[in-house]
Image 1 (spheres, rainbow, N blue to C red):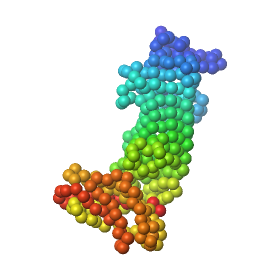
Image 2 (cartoon, rainbow, N blue to C red):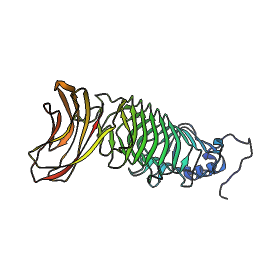
Image 3 (cartoon, one colour):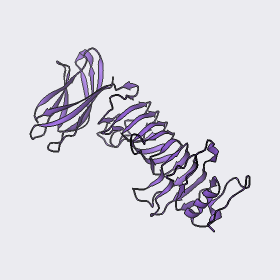
Image 4 (tube, rainbow, N blue to C red):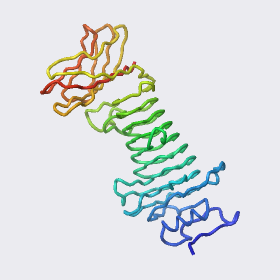
Length: 364
């Protein structure tokens, strides 16, 4: 009646949704419920979507669901929730390989791959343009996948997305909220935005291009970030006024640690300052017996005038020489007084006295 079929041990090695009729969404659901290894026909386009069902906890990974895509394409209808998604009741031990997901019928709020509540899962050679990984995803690996723009979205500090690994993947812009213990390795990336996250590792990746900042730290706790051996060639940033290696650190958790290209960022300061347009203010002094490099970020305060900006400052010790590279600013300019070894901020625009917040970070 409902199309459910049970196969005896050794009766088949895999099943196909075609055995259950023409409606892919319905047929795929029945195929998944009937056998743990489902195969699609090579290079065929299937219209509809499927959901990875809840799978009971088991120590044996082979008891999980295995989808062999054979480079077939899943193309959901406009009304479908996603291309491939997962049950909210722990769809563990799933393995999906060689599958394309066409999101051209879905609006921008929906995803080709949209998973939650699963652990010990494995995705290899998945091709889609939008991916979301939500609350309850743990110890899951992605290898050789094209994931498009990637959203990693936990729900709270005690309910984070954690222990993910992305190896040799092609990923667009990355937004990480409530994520921990996540590794990106040997992959192609774009902008990385982080908020309420820690223990993130970026190792030996290439940035396809940068549209805003390569790394953006949000306004909430971020710490334990490690970035080494990543490449952002100077000809691969999207906007002409953005330098190749660019970081916006709006908030950095002082008890964490951030490392870029083996340079530590333990020297963090965040201060408030009352300013009046037309004046210059001392921000901090630098050592005179060595070369030092600093990120300086002034945070937007108010709208009339708007004061914001970020700069890279390199001071060459006792020689008095220095370089300041502006990433971007509004009504502000940064300078260096070699006589007093002080980095200074000049406030422009017009208006009355106001408050701004600035942070500075010693790179080396």
